[in-house]
Length: 397
Length: 110
Image (tube, rainbow over all chains, first blue to last red; front, top):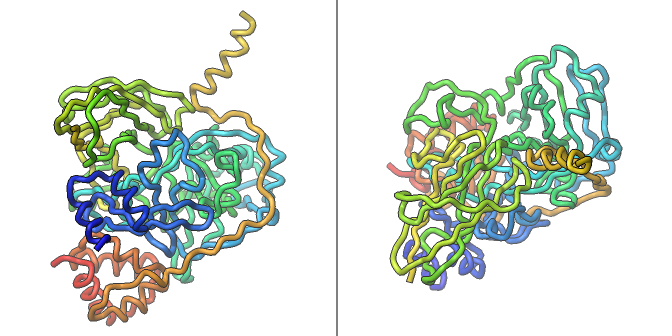
């Protein structure tokens, strides 16, 4: 009875946030799209998160949590694995990262070895390529995420460039391939390997990171060490990093050549149902923004209030954020809060004198490279890179 | 003036979001977790459910299927084919029609 009331209210006027708090007691949540009911459960080293799938585990951060601050706590950070062979016990002291391939000296580095190199820290958003896939219209197969397959953390480690320099790159190096400790169930399944172009691998900010928000990272986020590629989708942020292979050819493994490809079109968008278009590997994130303290479908009390949210892009940084209280007819410039760097969530706020009535709020970010979020929905068959302007229906009384 | 000159590059670095020098100690020792069993997740009953259990659960839990939007027969066929060709799922050709029929009736649309 209690459960059916919960489901009924979900399709009614009650908001997502109030649902979230109701669902907490019910160990379930309803994401706002068809077939959006999900369990909520606490996995090891994690608080209660939305369970998208159990094996391999995909855990989503409940959206209300992004209102708490610019950084996402480790125990609330989303989880995404491709293959069910996930080590459930990892000895950091015994862990090694091999560096092989087109190098002058093959290496086997311990974490202690990394600790002797110059340490750097970067604040960066880690976002799944398929974040928000559940909102695609028409719907597409794949992990049916809401908007919570993303998080922002301070990542500390050493520069990949410094690791590569220790090995010495050969002149014919074109890409660098990464593999973690995870493995497929079947020998026939391609092992998860991702590659970066050599210039990206050598850039300032790509890290081999072993600290997340000042602490060792949760095992489900890649303990003891993972790749951090600020500005790029998290498919490249290989967890439990164990192998670095310098390639003298473009990687043709399944996870580069077939999976994680986007249409080679503006905004990675094609007409729904299209096939046969040229594709490229997914790379930089596009610009996005969200309201974090008002959920779509919620009811709020009339009066002056602060509307808050976050914005980010693929590494140029957020130039401005505009908020609309009239369904995108007019826009008000929001105040940007503390700048933790060009790869970080940027918090923003705007004042709103909410008078009784029904409203559609919207938020639109502009990045430093001049890109502005568009109201036009994007579509591609894999459900990647959604970044349309978000709308929020709100009743004020 | 000298102070300003010294400070500016640091500020510029912060504003650019470039990785900053930091002190950090790599973790030591073993981290161990126990992932919950996926026994609680189950396929909807229906004709062909045994086939789904037999071939799908090898690599992933039933939730991978149950959370999908209602897919057409053509879309479920494409998913099964992808599992065979891309991921090497050992689904014999003669089991595919049963599997697709089950997926469409339990999790699909006509």
